[in-house]
Image (cartoon, rainbow, N blue to C red):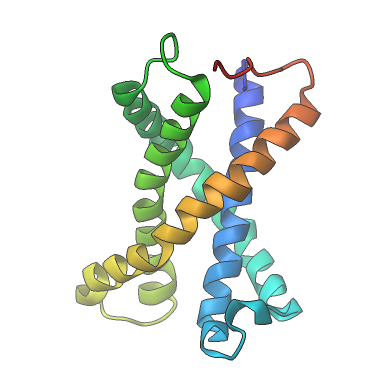
Length: 174
């Protein structure tokens, strides 16, 4: 785990872009209607990835800013309320922090995406924003949760460990 501000920023950027790419691929595929075709999301194409990468370029930065300002702190407070690393398994504490962060970040980024893509770029009326936002959270939360736990966080920890090899994590207690 990061021990300096620079390491924290690097870790945050990796995690932000890892989350953004997964969510952009998912949402691009849904916008293209791939879930409605036989085979569903197994029909991903190069066009999905190209479009998702274009949106990830700026959405990853937005994720980084929102998580740096609020998401990480809220996730940390959630974990601290439910877990004590000196008594509980540190891995469980890390998972609780991830869960708390996703529980804040998904609604926050869904609001950002609803405003940006549905209202500003899509032309939806502002009074529709609350309903659009709720629908976006309902659509994105399961994906954000599982993508974070099983793809983005493991990838981020793996890459961070390669970039800063001296930062070995403490082994989980049994």
